[in-house]
Amino acid sequence: MVSMLLHALALLAIAMAMRDAPRRGAQSERSAEVGIALKHTEGDAEYFETEARPGQAEAKAPAAEPGDLLAELLRERPATDPSDVLPQAPGAIGTSAVDPGGPIQPGSRGGSVGGGTAGLQGKARVSVFGTSGEGFKFVYVFDRSSSMEGSGRSPLAASKQELIASLDSLQDTHQFQIVFYNEEPTAFNPSGEQGRLAFATEQNKERARRFVGSVSAYGSTNHVRALEVAIKMQPDVIFFLTDADEPRLSARQLYELRRRAAGIQINAIEFGIGPKAGGDNFLARLARENGGEYAYRDITKFALP
Image (tube, rainbow, N blue to C red; front, top):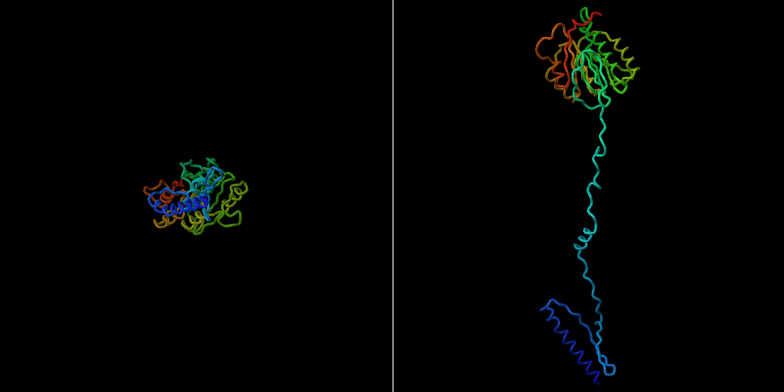
């Protein structure tokens, strides 16, 4: 009976403590564990044993908020270097190759006899009647109209001699084309395909000599058509030779040629009788506006055939 009475008093005390717990929780942020204390008597010794309330689960850590998980992942994952995932631009690795077909800067004036020497990176520097150019690809555009036959002297023969000397200076890694023109252009065509440049092999040079030797002077003159054909071949340098200051190229025609050339160097050689008259002309402007050189040659100084 005494034991039952003591147990009843203990239960009453616990119930009162549980009733007062909410009020104490409102006044303090401290939390306390609540359970049931059972009193046991063993001989003269008494002790209390606490046990969890029925249905009470073990305390668990609060669930992590989504923001906390994201922050934790960002802390644990190393930062990504953008250069590891972004594509590299073309040419970013190593050095860029030289483009043999691109435009070049005009070179210094050469000698008065056709010819040339090998330049840097395998380029050739060639000259025609004092104008020079450097590159891998060359087109010779020579007038063959009836006026090029001359009176007692042969401007056409002199131009052929200069052309062959210039071709001989090229190596087989260089390319060339020859266009003789009057009212229509006639191109050297060793491959059978119109508008193609030929490599300066010994075989092609021999074919070019035969082609040049077969050309004769006749007809009228159309400068623009011949220059357009040469520009379409996209050489590094064009050597343009004529004795005709008629028909003159207009400012509009010069502009269109410059736009189409887009950096191709154009050298202009003018044949005339006697000393050059003062003043500018369309040939000098053509060369100047296309980064090239201009030269005048008095045909009366040429040797008789």
